[in-house]
Length: 224
Length: 224
DNA sequence: CGTAACTTTGAGACGTGTCAAATAGCGTGG
DNA sequence: CCACGCTATTTGACACGTCTCAAAGTTACG
Image 1 (cartoon, rainbow over the protein chains, first blue to last red):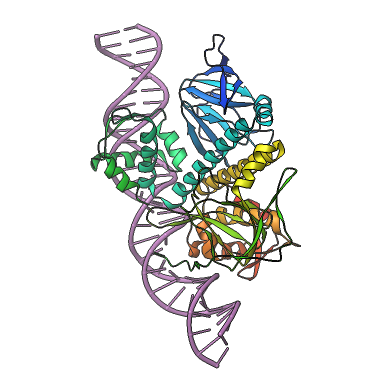
Image 2 (cartoon, rainbow over the protein chains, first blue to last red):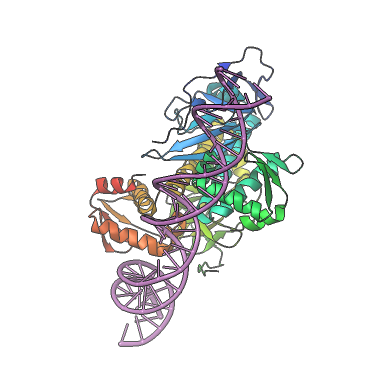
């Protein structure tokens, strides 16, 4: 199996925490601040699902492995995003840090109590779940009905919408992470970047730094 | 664009209804029974999302179209399944009957009120949403990390787990529906069925009737 | 019995994966 | 500050799987 270089070390609980919890509607669920180095395992598939997490800084990926070990990244979670929602008592997927990152972890029991006692909290939780469902459906459409170039263009547009600073975008994740999210190989992802550069849709001052110079061209490429 | 033969006719409200609503926890949300012919549109993407639906009999597919008209079936919903959950006020996808079917439609406002007044109902709704999220993630894994034969085998196993009667399975959907769910072509799906028959994993007395004679072999094929 | 829709089968084209190698980038230690 | 080594990325040539196009076969239904 491919060595993914994920460290087995746990995250350090940060003593001097400024962030206090996760807001669910009006309710603030108190939580613990944690810090992880890049490529650390936050939780693994099969472990007890004890916490709901919110990203304070950095980036996190949620990952599933198929029976024979092929890796599929389900989602990237950036600052402000929440992850760790589960139906049962165990995690169905694992979560790993993409970069060094800070998280807030709230005990699931607290979340459940908040939802049981406060309508707004319950609604916020439902909202969270349904919007993740929508993102997953978008992902299905991407994988099912788009070619390699279209997937990469769509991926960049999705990131650009949320994180572009003056037309510039810093990718926290490697080509391998992008490939495993888009169900391609690193070679194909790399070729797609190169092609988009040739088409003057983007510029690549460095491999992790993207300048979107022609959004329209990207949207054309995204097509599908 | 491919002609999918979906009729524009609405569903008839059944006067003499025996099913009365959808259960959410302890709460029974009263609804209206409806009937649709096969390949009828139940709702379209972009329409106002007024109802939550439950399948009483028959089968329903939820569908999204990519910008250039390629069709992706997100899920099949069989008797007992619920669909129509949305984040916003509009449907993000459309729903069509696969076969003649009977549904219960409950006004969203009633569902929301039930969830606001009753903890159990809110929890049931969340449960519904998270389990659909889990199914969508499984779908992502299927599309992202499996080959044609593996997808078809996985599809059959998923159906077989829920609807096998004495090792026999009746497929309500056409090869085209299966192809559009698995992101393959009808030709590739057909070849996969033929191959599984050659491998003595299944028998095909008719194209819609599957006898699973070697579940282990199917699980091998599903591999991935 | 005839017709239309659905399914199966075949041959060849195309896109992405695989394998191999060159290049660029980055942190570490001298 | 530079040299080194390691990792990440890019590029190329070729293989393989699925799609496309075409046609034959099957089933359902009037």
